Length: 134
Length: 336
Image 1: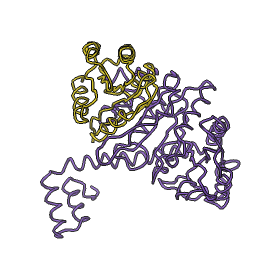
Image 2: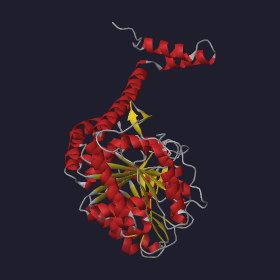
Image 3: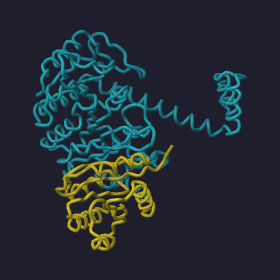
Image 4: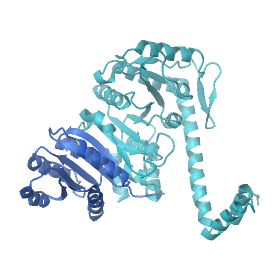
């Protein structure tokens, strides 16, 4: 039966080594029926954009706990655009101070999921973000 | 839209290749049309299947092999298959973790695929995805599969050269070799050969091969024992090789052996014969699927429901019920 599977790339850009959150989210997305390409730690923006292209993903989830979001996220979004992947919904999870949230939204980030976000919220958010981009 | 991405994919444009693989995964009319446009350009790549139990280091080995091919100046397509959860329909595709250093190499294309309900270790669309990469000009395509159950046989149907990866086990004996593994392996690899027991593992595998886990070949969709020599010259004796994929040790030798197998397939005429088998199996599979779809399309929901109830109530047996449904759909088996 031809069905539309949502494919999500989950990556940890930069040098941040705490991946439990990313793994928990990856499992939740899988349990919600999505295909999660989990690329793990120490991904550069170039690696993330390249993988997103080859895997033809609908969404990219960036897990950042290191505080480097204002450097890493814009670079990922720029590279995605350059490769013709502007339709890919970008989500950021982790630690993002409130004052940075508007800038990230302006760059095109669909949603920012900080501590305390429920998995249900994330699943729904990813689904809605992907559908909106179609 | 389809017209554009097929043309672009045939020219090797990576985004188009990625989107075309997605078209193949979705299946249906779009996939069929795309495939008919690129099929004439397939048949050139060497498709190498890598299978083996989880934890044996398949992904790391694929990563190392790809690097060797790149050193030879060849581009490589990689398809890594992981299981879809039967409960949620979702999947975690994590093979890329082991292939980080290949991600930005423009000469390598890596695609992760979920089995999506397919019972073997490959997705239904894996063969079609390999066709896309073949047509796009990748001379080498590495297919990495889930290693469990019947998947080994599945991969032997799709790949031209099949590698089975083992690793040394804690004790002296190699872990129980599943039926079928030795029979479909064109090459056997003992990875993580730096661990204790590696030499024992190699010896055990060689002994099993000598004892005549006989050479088998595809014949009408099944594996059958082959007596004597196949084609001109010596029959292929599956080599047992040692590698430490993480350090790249033994991998150049492995690639040389893989390429030697490809040469052997051509020289012996086996390449043609296996291709014929593959095509025949493929056609049967497509016919089965398509005919069933069409047949079910001719039968109304209520009719089907009523038939089910009759069989449940033991008023009719399943075979007669099926005959009745087929007759109603116009397929009563009687020649005009």
